[in-house]
Length: 177
Image: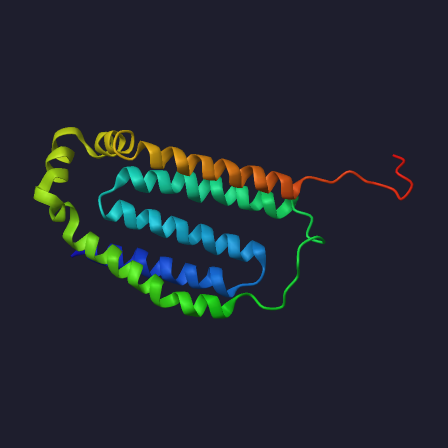
């Protein structure tokens, strides 16, 4: 019962933070709401018994990605960016049912737990080896190719952010520098 209350608390916290992300227009406030949502999601993982995923959520997303967003926010020359008066409120409202469906899925997984895995395979592995070892063995065997593809996508995104943020060489009309 206590776990369900904690899960509900973190879920509501994540929903309120996600609404803050899509409703605020100031980029600093959006980053702060995103950081709040990422911390709440890490709390959901800890409550569900996925300590490794919760710790990775805090380390990778809540710390590294949020700092990266702040870096991009300060490095990008905003005079080149297109300024719009709208903040994509329509897209946010239209995506809300999908978000609720995803939270319903999280709740079902939380309530059923690892007992819903085929033939209880995960429960036996977790009891024998531990949560971290099971995630590592599955990640680096069955899902190794997908793991490497995701790392390449992140690298391409980082290169794109650096290219957007770099200063262009100043050119003159008579091609002298």
